[in-house]
Length: 254
Ligand code: ADP
Ligand code: MG
Image (cartoon, rainbow, N blue to C red; front, side, top):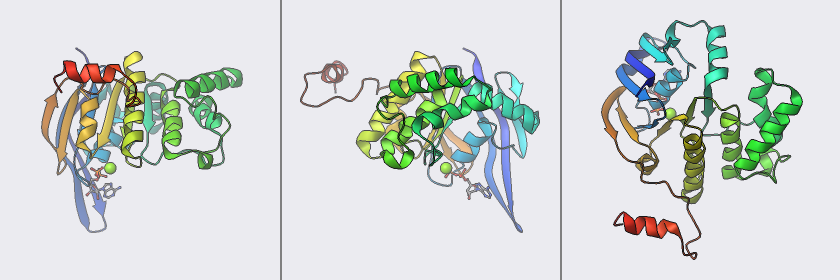
């Protein structure tokens, strides 16, 4: 299998006045095309720094970051911006939607930068919002939607132009357990259907069940790496229904 991302001996040192903060201390990591990878670790361990680096949002102090065969650490800001537009989608913990814009306009936003014609943009945004279950909410603003709905808009915005790699930093960090499951199922279902690579940061071990590569980060280093089968595949359903989720659990001997 091809690696879509390779991180080689990456260090990140932040200068804080007189003090130096070592956020990453020699990280090596390979992520295969189509992997669902999660970076798991406690607060302050360096997860977001590593994710931002892989998404080309920050430059390393030293080391190499190779995405789709390209050395990202050597690209100019302009090249990097274009590279991100073409290949990368990003989902944030706090959704980062524009508060004065509707769901439709928020999802259209990345396509404006890509120079897509208005009619096409609107059609793609509406289709994507319908696909994430917000077909009835196209003209709602963020303040008129729940957290889970706002994150669905965030997901639609990240996926709308079908980028090869989706990054998500604590995407369910502000959501309750039920909504977390819905959002995780949604993201992995779309990524699976389109054969996209999904890279996600979390401090919640339960999220690892959705992923097949679990990388534990500690003190700016990769502490361990595990490859496993994805256990959480079926959609959560109404518990009163007779459903395949139970059959699936029985099959697994749960
Ligand atoms: P996590 O996402 O795992 O909570 P971060 O990657 O955000 O951790 O942070 C790792 C370490 O780097 C922390 O000690 C944090 O304080 C420090 N750090 C992160 N970003 C900056 C920055 N822009 N300036 C200075 N220090 C930073
Ligand atoms: Mg973080």
